[in-house]
Image (cartoon, rainbow, N blue to C red; front, side):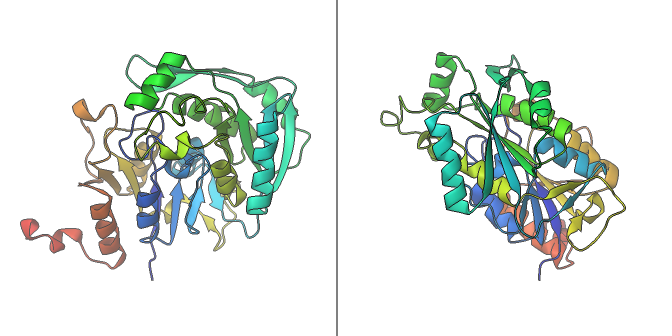
Length: 337
């Protein structure tokens, strides 16, 4: 029986070759079968109307994963389900309401609609370094408007403005998902204010409608091109997302701390708070070279002590299984004997 707990991240807005468009579910499913619990960020499993998150995977917003690995919070698995609030800019559209009702009926989820008097505005942009970013407003007011409600998780369903030529280039030629960066920025800002599970889905029902029958996109983009609301994956993730536990003295079999984590698995060409936290905790970091980012070509790792480089996620799975059964992976390779 597998015993290891891991963290699987695919950052958004960095043009990850696997998972940079609409999740990397094959890789998540594979690695989850090598672990007892696998913590994933939404970008790793969100694919618009599709989210096949494994039952042992914990859906956690990216900045909350950072804080978890830094020892600032624990994650408590829930036994039933979360009460989800869906915050939309007023007035809610017919498409918004249908998306919410689909989540209620399709998942059996507890979902409540809240129309925001002060809207959350988001503008997607591409940064000079090739990453996705943008500008936003209304996050402070969002937290104030949600204060009267009793809920466990927040689904933010708001439009993202993006220049037509940027959007068209992405759908036709690929590259950096222009909407992903601003979604990550807003999710982080909101999560730090409400300290609850958060995920965002764009309410741009026309974002793909004009090209859905005109362009055959890459397989990695296909889930997004066929979707209208981009929200069912968010509902699926938040439905049973773990609670953020800030009382670090509370420990039980359903609560994970950073002491329980045995590895972090990451694309090549990215380095941030989760990596730094793992270095500090002496947690092995598995770098998958096949999953490149827009920085990979000229990326140099200045710290290599806890890093293990593998070619692909199949090799990563073998590495994790060797760790789980107590075999030094170097003893399996002829080249290291």
